[in-house]
Image: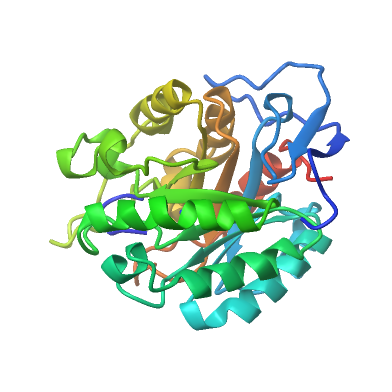
Length: 321
């Protein structure tokens, strides 16, 4: 997240088929109407007939089982975040997620600088991670250094992805390689971070983006943000057009909204999820964590209204076999 806006052994081909409930079609968005079976590739990419998966971060990589019991459904995708020396923990949590019918979407910070990683210094670390993930009995989505904007030379970040993606995809046939950007820099057409300039020139399975609803937060000057942004028009439509032009799957790797945003627009969450599906996004992960919240506002789904909105969207989302 940035402070201005915004990453199997024994399984080949299609994982499984299942019937998925359509996401909520409130207001302007409409859900897929295909009667084709919902299938998942070995890397966990859902077919178009599935509609998108809904998932979340939960606290600080905490076990979401108790929360899921309250929701009445398991999460479709679970976002977790790891340091370079936490590979064993990340693999163990991914194994638990797969057993619970969630797709783990894991982000790593890297053991060396971007330039060193692009030059191959971290290859042994990456191969070890990919080999461990390849032994899991289900799909995993992985990202390296999500939201890179402002963290270094973006050309080095692109070079990292171009170098690491073939290693990961060649080692682990069950792992989808994702590259996660903020989204805001791209839709605002910042030339430093234009999609065609920063996305790697190699096979990537998922382009991820982290767009937030900032209504009810405070700017650095202490002024309340009261802008209401249509996520579909501002983010999803341009991202979807670009992804379609590249033949690339795309998803929201993080999003969130404040209690104030829910109060003025209580259907925001299920509507936004339906809008994502209408633009062929394959997943949306909500940042249900107190991290990166502030004294006067939070992303956490702790109010009855926000909890109910998420549960409603989840009940209508695709199911992992």
